[in-house]
Image (tube, rainbow over all chains, first blue to last red; front, side, top):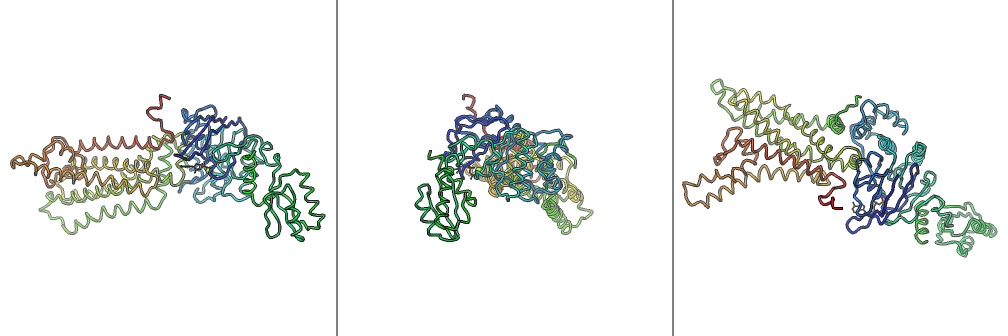
Length: 309
Length: 282
Ligand SMILES: Nc1ncnc2c1ncn2[C@@H]1O[C@H](COP(=O)(O)OP(=O)(O)OP(=O)(O)O)[C@@H](O)[C@H]1O
Ligand SMILES: [Mg+2]
């Protein structure tokens, strides 16, 4: 469905994308993960015929993005990371505009628009002005906009950015529905756990290079035995610090108010042994597990772990 | 709500434009200025039965005022057409639809032209006051309407071009005014200066007045809207130019061609992936 061959893009001296080889099969959800400036948006814009690649080729549904842009546009829905809406238009008129832009016959539009609004849970906002909708609603409306010409491929650039947790879950539900409809979806994010549940395959991109690509467990951190751990203690803080510092599987130990954060490179077995030791030393452990608050750090750990392979 | 099979951009632009309060204010202000000045003139020069059909001043004033307003409004209306979409971050989405850059540009131009024409047509009844004074022929009025039309078209495409070429609306508006200023004022000044220099260079006094009839100067005068406007009104500007061609016809052709070129160029600039002329080799 989506294929890139030796795709490169440079903006003047900046190499935004280097020799990208990507292949996404029909009906798959592909998660694209990378830090800021990795080249995710660049790749997506090339695939959406908005940027010209410096070198290499890219195909969407078998169409060349450079030579057959009209066919490519007809077969994909693109949602940019930042987008605006028009003032003084209602949600229905907004979708009607894009339906017109895709040359959908007028008599088909009203039922199509009603269905799409239903899909993204915005039926009650049909007559509301788009600039009065909240960010999350606009995001969902934009998703409906991507689907207006029933494309086979969806390219969503950080669709969850700026959304609260509830809106993220709603969005994920909609995406699952789309996956069931057989759409091929390319979705980008900074945050791995956000995609973990949704994606069949993920690709990790850093500084314009694809450094890992494949099924989630192949790429994921657990297979490589690196976890960002967090331990919270109530008593005997110093004894815990000593034990952790001595443990050979603990790296980058950080101490804060009520606990520690560190990278653990051992197996689950060794993790259990560490906990055992802490308890034997009468450290009052109130929390022992993966760090959940700092997803950026998890992300950094992943990319470092993969790059250093 | 009726979905229409019309060009979607035109429908959307009209909806956006006529739902905003700004549009009403623009129209009101325009009519106030356009109506106020002839009305003031009417108060200063009350109609006397004896002088009917002899006073042309009001016609000249109205036409000049109309022209000034067009110069003011037309570039501003289109100077934000594309850069506005870019600033609102809707342009990229628009470019991934089946609308070709050329359609986008034409429809944007069309809606702006429609609005400027609305301004002009809404102020047309004011010419009925002018008619009271007489001394204006219907052909003159028609030519004047055509002249305005050509100017609206040209200034509109100029604004559109700047809007496509430059990222920011504010900068693009300034540049559009700058280029419009070049055509309206600088070509006129150039014409006068060149004429004066040529007169200085002509030693024979009897031939000096011939200078104004030289073809280069005629063409230069033919592209200056102010000179052409006065030619249409039948008024004489400082040096008497004898045109070997009909000035408004030459003017219209010149600016229509220029407008079409600007529109095509804008459509080319708007294309995300530009096919270069040598690309067939690859
Ligand atoms: N228009 C541009 N001109 C010059 N350099 C650019 C341009 N757009 C992007 N870049 C550069 O290309 C690289 C990749 O940018 P890109 O936007 O693809 O990153 P990203 O992965 O989408 O990042 P983010 O997570 O911040 O959205 C960056 O180093 C950026 O500086
Ligand atoms: Mg991005």
